[in-house]
Image (cartoon, rainbow, N blue to C red; front, side, top):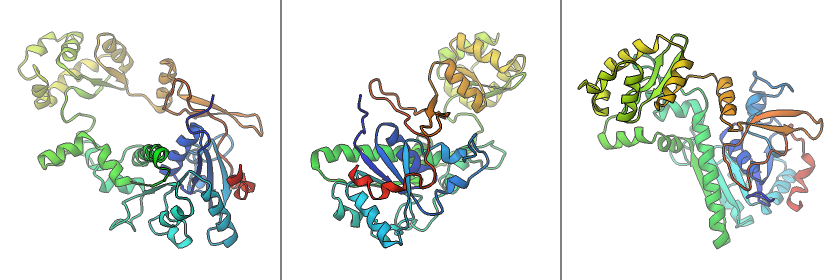
Length: 381
């Protein structure tokens, strides 16, 4: 059965995370993706340790499967012309160069839409193309200036970044959505268009209720550790051997929690009788709950509370989280066979489930310039 994006040709000029994750998602669902790199290669090829069994950077490995790879020097006239020939026949181009750089080589949107009016051209930048055009779009920087670090960490501690380049991931998802929207519109108009994604905008939209409350109240939220600004108890609690997360979303769940903690009278305490009251007295409530949870293991509380209808879970390591997903039948790991060696490697599977035309894992991430012969033939494939 054909995949949703079968026949769609993608030229990927991007590096690092947001762009490559975007193009890999398209590739997982059938798009032909050609990764175009400089002689130096994608920076993440050298971001190690850690490495996999083949000695390849696990960062690079995570976002480049199902692609072919060539090397192109934009300053070389012959190679640039070969690349433009590919673009003439392509459906999508993804790039994350600093604004203005590609215009020097005639690879900007205005130049390429004359070459290929049907091209969907996706630009991913850190801070847009106006006053922020010259700013470097590194995830840590965006987490800092975009407000995410200001609400991450303990109230009496320093601001913290999230433990993964989350803003890049958000931008990649937005880029995929934008590209699919533009392709859908092209079905009726016959014309491509430019898709513009910036990391700062992706983060501000991703802040959801936190940015919404800031606009509504004029007051920026503060760091609250693992607590929720609008719900209680909705945070982590110390157990005898670790930490358990308890996420009470309504009064019924709170009553079940109180009953299971052996303190059913809490529901009649005016400090805890409603969510608003619990939010106002969250410090006292946490002390009461933690006095109980400290008596048993995190796994015990997770199982017991979930059985009682209270959302709860042990704070897992990533390895434990993968195993937990397997226990739930979520198939979080994809197996990919290297056609050259027959070796089977594991990667995290696509999170997008389609009942008929799901993701396929055709090839491992390519070596630098592995498919160099395609620079002149890809357009005619």
